[in-house]
Length: 137
Figure 1 (cartoon, one colour):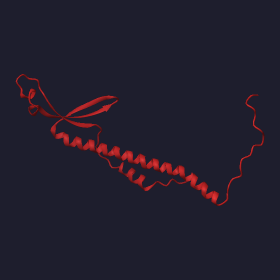
Figure 2 (figure 1 turned 45 degrees about the horizontal axis):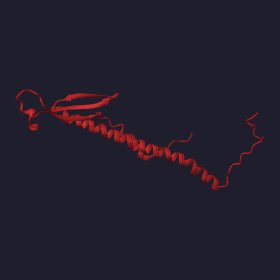
Figure 3 (figure 1 turned 90 degrees about the vertical axis):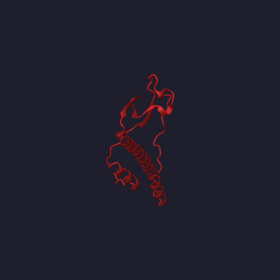
Figure 4 (figure 1 turned 120 degrees about the vertical axis):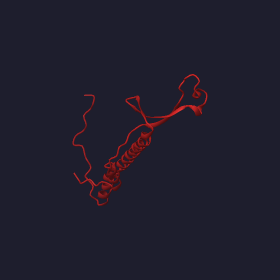
């Protein structure tokens, strides 16, 4: 087998995968809620609702998983979610360049065959030695 030459853009994207960082999937939500206590102004006024309350949610095996966050954790978790989204974009970019590379390999045999044909080194056509058998017999 011949030596595989890895395109520069494939190497560059693959190198990014070696950069370790905490990341997560999902989304961060901020909520303001009504408490339903009698006489609490949150029932009548949106600006009087309680909160903000933060959570991180994601879907695992078709079910939503959520986790409450305190105010100190929100910025860190948002950065981790953004890192996860960036990683997903890098994976998609990697797939794209690898598929282009694979397509180029499919084109390489055609280009080599054209080069051989230009030089006049064509193969002898295949001929049958006997007649084909009937399918009815």
